[in-house]
Amino acid sequence: MISAWLPAWLLGITAFVTLLLNLFLGPGIFIQLAALAKFLLPVPAFGRACSRFSVGVATRWAACNQRIYKLFHVVDWQLEIHGELDPGKSYLLICNHQSWVDILLLFDIFHTRLPLVRFFLKRQLIYVPIIGPGCWVMDFPFMHRHSREAIEKNPALREQDLETIRRSCEIYKTVPVTVVNFIEGTRCTEAKRAETGSPFRHLLRPKSAGVSFALNAMGEQFAGLIDVTIAYRPTGRNLLWSFLCGEQSRLAMQVDVRPIPQELVSGDYQGDPEFRTRFQNWLNDLWIQKDALLDRPSTNERAKNRSPA
Figure: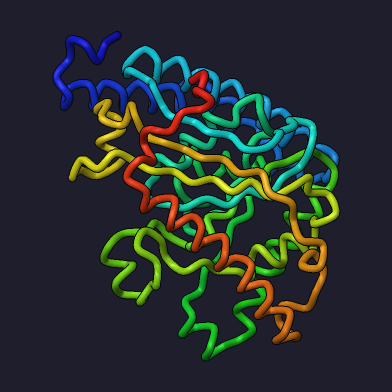
């Protein structure tokens, strides 16, 4: 175990470089070639083949990451799963969002348990080398994420993201998929929580429109809603750096597989105020439960199921 004899700062640098090399020199090359091929030959059937190939490569990347975590860190993540998971079925996954580490953890804990996770990403990320084209070829939805003020001035802007959701969900109808939505819209920090006037102690307000449209487009295909809660060990450092330095070996994750209320699968979120209120209340109730869970002092001690990572 490398963490036993390297100082934390050097461990963090070494782990970061190793994970970066695994991304860029391994699967990154093959996925970039698939993205280039899909871009140069925009034929739907060929594009789907490029996507399937890239998903297979990304699955192996996640498996390599698991080995890297074991090599560099003492991995004793506390994972509690309530409900059954099936890698042959599609799911909608929501999660609290605090750090880039959240993404690495979701790839890790659901590797082989679920279809490869696909995230709703900010549109700007499509221009990030390696990551942007790689996510594009695997049909990740890229959202514009306009501010509330901009949408109020120009309501037509909302349609851009809704159309992205519709197109992506049409693609996902052909294969099992785990659609991930960080419904807070951005990483939660104390500053953002105060700025937005969030009523929650550990979370930002949930944004419900994207979830509603995903359910509207694919609700009948989803086997359930996966509600993930991640609690990190407080260290006073940036969470990504803390993770790389091996300080998050006891982080806790709870996974709740919930039924999706059928009355919320179809409905006019934009045009029906009563439906919109019911949908928002449903998500708010989930967020109240999540906030209470994160408030428990014993969160990091629970461990009914251990992560194999």
